[in-house]
Amino acid sequence: MFKRILLAYDGSQHAKRALEVAVDLAKKYGARLYIVEVIDTATAFWGPGTHVPFDVIESMRRKAEADIAEAKARAESEGIQVEPAILEGDPAVVVVEYADREGVDLIVAGSRGLSTMKRVLLGSVSTGIVTHAKRPVLIVK
Image (cartoon, rainbow, N blue to C red; front, side):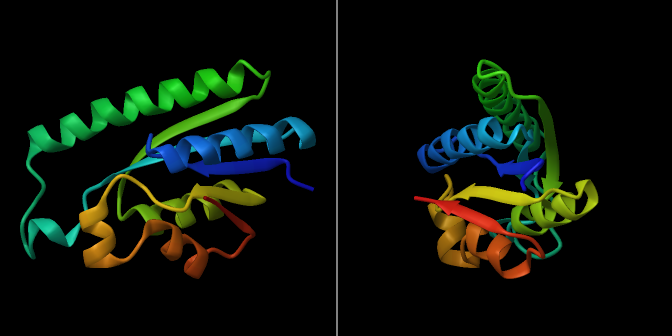
């Protein structure tokens, strides 16, 4: 049933629980696991017409690389094939677009991520994924 599972990841505790669920499902179904972390360059926090400073993006990229490496190692320790990706943009939109492009069967995400401020300003990423995805979505608490 699930041959391609996408995990939306950000290194938060909810994402780590989602990783465990995604790893379990990938093992049960013999699925490939796509682990995606999105560098949020679209947050309204920066204000209209402004750009996220380069050093901030680089800092977020280093964090994303570390997060992805940790999640990839965890999944591969269970014998799962992993396709990692670090992308940029609005996290919910980018995750859904990536899922469409890769033809995944299931999207797995934690119920909350790292950014409390963003949830207050824009609504949660998980809600955006559920709202816009054209495939099954599993939200892990």
